[in-house]
Length: 294
Length: 172
Image (cartoon, each protein chain N blue to C red):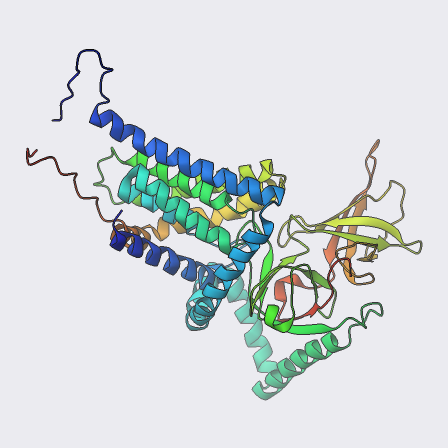
């Protein structure tokens, strides 16, 4: 057992056990202060360029390895996913067996090919006129959300293909989201359902403006700034407003109204909407080579 | 910390991150997927004590922060606290029961996710607490318990027990 000695005229020396107990606390304090500093710098935007640069380097380093692992281990992930969705998988399996009896294998394969071809063809001729002139880069979705607290997807295009942060991403049906981080050959897209996403939209014959906010992956969108008494029918389309300095060019279908209600003394209607694009089953998308403010 | 320990810890963090984004991210239930980042931080505290656990949790969180588009530094903050707290809470326990480690990692993951969402809400993202936390807890907490075995084994390899300090040959 270690002992401590106190010399006359000096403060008592700190016992080793006491020192040992304090050191972890000091380490934790140091790490917490460092973390809070990073959070503050990111939150205030002081070091956004440096942080984005570090993230790009990290993605460039990890993406090839992750891609290889994903390709090799995808069957394992599918197996685990299938086990978790066992009930739904069984039901789906029964339906597929019924369908299989009705159709021949060759016809099924051709139908799938036709569907993929139609999806790609739709991307080449976007149905909305105002964004026709904007050049696009076709991309494949290679991964889903990388965090439970962010609704994102990863695409197989990056700065090498001209993609940059802030560029809108669309599918054949409408707006998907915008690029938040682009590395050399991949980019991360924040979906319009993400809780950080807000899209300025127009609706109705008068082109009234509102704000569509994400409420999390798989959840309905919330439409803000709709005055009480506004007639909003179910299925009413909401398109990007394209106002000056908007994050998206105008005229892109964003969502359709699902429900609308108003309570007494409320200053706005409670409106929910469903994304125009099927965000749960995205395969191919287009990145619009358009940056906010351009 | 020795250089070999640093290399081993880096290898474990990198492999965990690659498996997280390459495999576990694809297992999506109700919009969430199992996340082992905080379980890894908790395993650091469980295996190596509060101080090294906090450092390991910080490093793990920082690497995770580089790869997800959320507030930078938030996972590092939560990871260091989770590593420290797990170390403090479990260092005096007799570890004879097989269920202690899974329970410790699941509890630490649940507490860490709640802390993460609460801090996110305080930084202006209330949806993290209201919408995202439930599915994340429902999936990541049991995942931490299920994966406790391999995670602890990997972290024990990365963070071997520190050599006792030289006492001048007095012994004991």
